[in-house]
Length: 78
Image 1: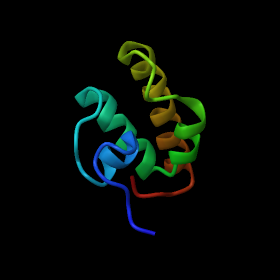
Image 2 (image 1 turned 135 degrees about the horizontal axis):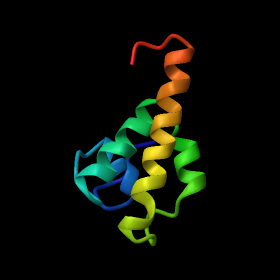
Image 3 (image 1 turned 90 degrees about the vertical axis):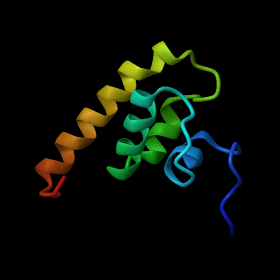
């Protein structure tokens, strides 16, 4: 199945197309979360299309920090 096009999905826009969708910080956190294996958690936790930016940057940071710590504990080279 081919990937969608730019604008179809904010996560794909950030990861695949390298297009900014939110803020630089939020996009970076989303990319790190996906790279740490947290895409499904990200999709379950946030409705990225409707939340004001200020309301999801802090929780994104929390998810990223937790996934990073868990990855280090499992021996990932992060």
